[in-house]
Each structure stands twice: as structure tokens, then as C-alpha cells.
Image 1: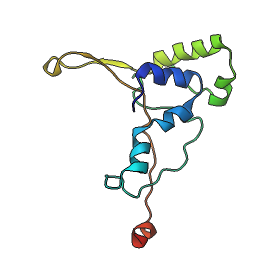
Image 2 (image 1 turned 30 degrees about the vertical axis):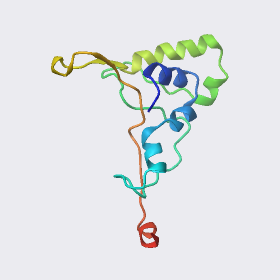
Image 3 (image 1 turned 180 degrees about the vertical axis):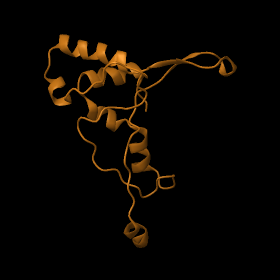
Length: 126
């Protein structure tokens, strides 16, 4: 994705999951590339309340299950509270090992628990 970790968290807090799906790299790969590992695979339309699953903090005490449609209509203070909650759930920074430079890198929340399907009929017609 071309989005930063902070932008992704902000969009999640505002309930703008459609923006995240539009910037999703696998979704882009399925639509534009003809020769890729998932050629002719399809993905069902995702649920509107399906939030990114990568990379959540281990042993977290809470999870985020807010209805995105309700988030869009919440006050700015409530949305800020949601952003604070998301920051406690997702790991958005990590330090590379020293042999890779030891830099602090963004870890961008993304969709990874997904279902793709492929039908034989499609290949017969191609």
C-alpha cells in the first residue's frame, strides 16, 4: 500500500475502510496484473466491518470492533478516542535488526486474513 501507518490508523478511526480497500496491494494485483501468483483468482466483496488484521500487538487486552458506518457519524472527540484505542492495538513501528541497518520502520496495518477463490470454468474459456 502507498499509505503510511498513521494514515491507515486515521482512516480506520474515521470509518473509511473503503479507502483502505482501494489502496490495498493484493486488490490492485488481482485487478491489474495478468501474470502473477494469483492469476484468475477472485476475492468476494469484503464485509464493511472487516478491519486490517496485520500487525496486532500480542497479548493485547482489547480489540477494535466499531461499526465503520457509526464511526463516520461520531464526534471528533469520539473519533480521536477511537484513534487512541487503535494505537494500543496495532504495532505500527519496529526496529530492524542491526545487520539490516537497525532503523525504525513503519509497520502498516493491512488486510491479511482473506479468502480468494478460483474456478476451473474460467481457465477453460481462456
